[in-house]
Image (tube, rainbow, N blue to C red):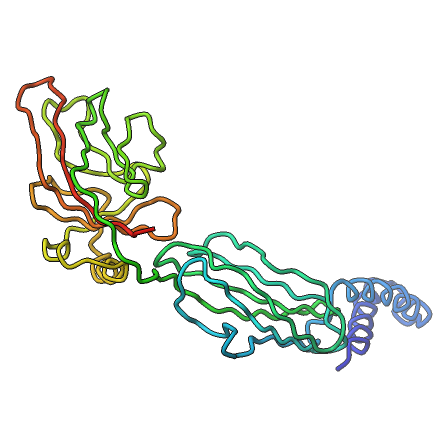
Length: 310
């Protein structure tokens, strides 16, 4: 049934309903008058938005050596190319837009264009945002002039490039109650941090508190980093980012927000909370200075670690 037929049918029902409210039910003139009044009312409401039964447009991603058309795993910052094909359901297309969302966060638009014609093909390019292990959902929407739209989506998982690891030795994190030395550490930059440094940079941070008489020997972070205890063999064998990535995938379910009490020889895989492309580090405790004297805060943990050679 067409939209006009639906409108007339609805209008007639309204007129019949209203007729019941009229004292003189036999007066056809009143009935016809009510119908005439009902028609423009129904027509007005029927004009708000396209007919829900109008055919929807179609949209798809064309496969090809140069184009992404389905779920894949790609390194962060890779240039992605999409070949979009859209066809209107009825009449003409009005627009095509594309956006993405990282791990379910708010979408960010990277393409939005008005178009005309029954069928449109276009090439859209953008660089992949996100850190290692993030899932980025890309949404592509075609809109018709009649108000109907259709969306197709794909998922892209961010993986690391295979890059050699760089080693650091003899790094220190002091008791947090020591006011003159580095009590936290930025694994990305490879530098110690004082207590007042930016929280977003503190991948490692001593968890002692002012109420503690002794050194806690526990690490946490100030940026939501995660810790997984692994083996000394992992520290010996790790030579590329791919090794760290696979190690994280195998052990991430047991990750915690801080370490257990540390001992010399402990090895931890750390996933930094910093907003950077590669966030995995392998840390080995090489020495612990724990001074028994109460009030002496020159305690520290010495460590070596491996990071991406960037």
